[in-house]
Image 1 (cartoon, rainbow, N blue to C red):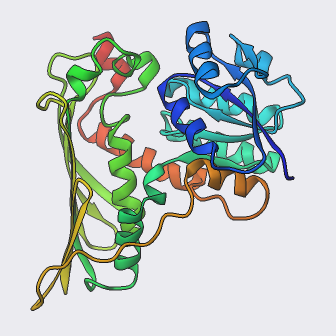
Image 2 (tube, rainbow, N blue to C red; image 1 turned 90 degrees about the vertical axis):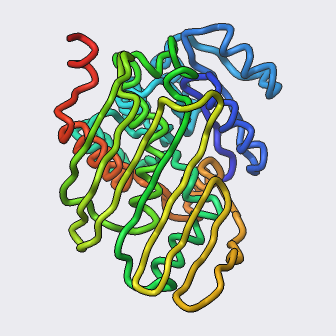
Length: 327
């Protein structure tokens, strides 16, 4: 397949990011837009000059088009399962924003459906394509710091105040709070860079009088023997976004602080290592997978692991987003 024709389900802010990346792809055409909001559809159309793209308020009507090969799903979290399932049933390839779904059971259903349909199912975890995290994954796999002994991952973000009143704090649409939203990126880095398997977790959780969880502080024991912590703090100073990791091994450590990496090896001066070059992104890699030019970069099987740890954290805190909101 040379030309790939795309339909977009959900035309809010994140859809603009996807279309901006697709401008770098060859022979890709946006042929249809679906969103209940006409204003949202028009904003996307006008910014990217999509004069010939058809518009739909209902995604199911858009999926009837025979001129669509694939869809990019940018809708609220709890709608991902339905939108992706409907798209696969209509014979379309699917790139879905994180999280894949809001439950591991739904994720397993989608994975099986995509496999049966013979269609690409990819999840948009963009850190897989960023040089800093590519370096960390490769360095750990190559034994640069020796056998990994522990890992700490932390995100500070003014999520409580910045997202107040949006769908992201409505559990009927979000499926959870900051852990399910921004926190999924941090879980992704923790699991993807290390390849570790969470075995048990303990969690402290705080909602700060919001309808969903804001802070989660979790300790993890991995099946491979390492220990770790995952800290998601959503009650933070205004406009703050700070992401930090420490990967410790028997021979040293890798430290990431908001875009800066330092490698510290025992007995050596700390250095900022040379990073690999980014060659693709979630959207262009999706197109390549459709064309059979590469494997699926972030398959559903992997995204399921992120959901399983998310669910384990909620369970450890004896917390259910919908139950809490309705209490």
